[in-house]
View 1 (cartoon, rainbow, N blue to C red):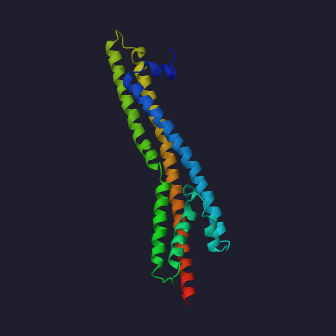
View 2 (view 1 turned 180 degrees about the vertical axis):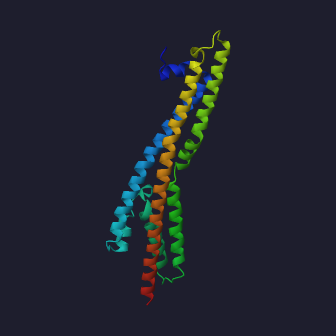
View 3 (view 1 turned 90 degrees about the vertical axis):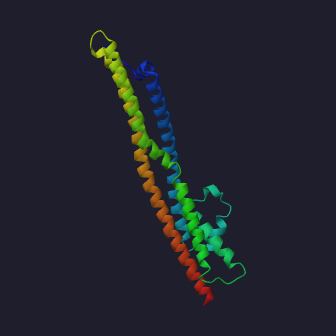
Length: 226
């Protein structure tokens, strides 16, 4: 029986199935690029959050801590550090030359909420792409499978004898299309679930930090008024 390599199957496949295979391979490569980018990015955010919160809770003066992050580029301000910068910056703006009331702190809370919304947007970057790859790729592969089976029946109808050799090429390309669809979808689904969970965890951590920061600033305001 003649042996087929993946390349042989691709070259002997019909044009439609070849297009399906190429699309799935491109999607798979792009999804792996996104997976590695998100993996390293999330690990970087986790490490930065731990380091900054350790420094924050070490008892360091908040003004000194704020000054220490002033020169950090905006694209490197993530997580709790980003929440602190926006919240404390608004607090300093309110405190500039006037007495802060507890009602004024609502402006600080709004600033913290805005920074959290931006943080959520940053954490979810590219995740919809992985979700789409995971849901659509199997159907793209299934389309190639159906088309390959159609070619198999056409080969069977044109053959003088109903043998396995008549349908083998079409069945083979159909199965390869199915396999490529799963090859693209499975890593994307697994990665999406993992990254979505990690992103939610980091956002929750930043949200808790924001509430603690707002509470500290509230106590400081009340103390200064008394």
